[in-house]
Image (cartoon, rainbow over all chains, first blue to last red; front, side, top):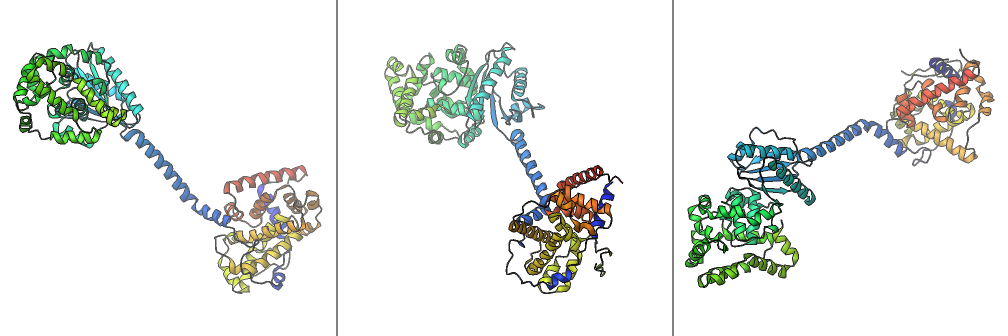
Length: 398
Length: 197
């Protein structure tokens, strides 16, 4: 018996049922109900079911749209949104922006040289280390990494400190491995980055990268007598020279597996003796500032001459010749505001000791200034006395 | 189109237009305002479907008739309270179901008639063809209440599966699967009793 036969049988059987109830029902007494009872109540659940049945297509569409939107946002976050900013300063300076998967999504240079270097480079979607290797290749071929011990400043900004440190470490190792394969022993300085608007503004005013500006800012924090506008004109190697000469404790502001070579600074000392090279990089009008940079240079034979010149000058004279578009006081003040440095008491001490003592007794002065780090140390200690260890850390860390 | 040949004689085919699921909801408003012609129309449109549904609940012709009668009286009492929700037949079925459950609670009988009661129910004797009667008794015996509702409403009232699903408040896929499973059970049952043709 097939379906049709079954249906016919059932239909015939039920249709034969005698149901003549109409007149009986109409004769039944009934009262109009004031409200639904439990028998006649129109179920809300049923109503909801009926409504939801009608809304099902719309709900399905809405759900699909929500899933699509979620997937799209997730994809955007993973692939299109900037997660890390990596700065590679080798003179020229390069900025690499990566997504959460450490794939490069944007690459930019600071100037025309940098932009020419990265022209035609297919970087989108490629791993950070692959692009970094490609950039190093171009830097070597372009003779930008020519010396046997080139200095490279590697800076990373990421909101997640763990990821930031991991990226710094991995890139540091990758750069060393790649350049050592070319028999180049790089000096890689790594620093975490937390660019502020002030830093960015000063970087733009001095036409240097934010990462290099951060290094300079941190150097000034260690030695307030250093001038930003002077340091901005120096190459990375020269910055290392300066820090070595004024005995800045670079450990406090950068991490480097090449720190021993930086501190020994043999090659850089030779370079520093050749002052002409540095002078070429500094405008004539900033000679006075250059002298300021060497105020602490008690090791160098030129020191006496420079310091003597300094002592002949009125300290106010510096400010008179300072025509830098960036106001030093503002710069210092803003950094102090940002870093909660407090009063620069040590700067006043340093001025007194350097200028006065040098003119009286260079030998005595050499004792006082033999280790400017002591002054810096005092500075940091003074600050820590006031504000505790946390402040000390904040001064030298990012 | 309304057919005025309302069934009084059992031999006359009752009104089965197949459009019972598309009942005009405006009838309830008219009934609520005392328009008995509207009730006549409602009765003629829904009588067979109401009986079929009642039969699936009670598995007894007499009890089904009582239930149908009570349900229509309730409709008369509450028609003015009816809120249009798209499926008027669903409301009438709900009234029947609630009345049936209420009666079961009052009588203390939770379980419906068992197989023996149905097979010896002489009230199905009105079915002239023994084969038709056997199929109806088989359907009321081996199928559960939901399967009976689906099969009978589809076969007798001509309701589409989608309309049945919306009326008794289950999914379309569930309705289809239960319908196919019910037919298989019914066919197997009848074959075991030698009804193959």
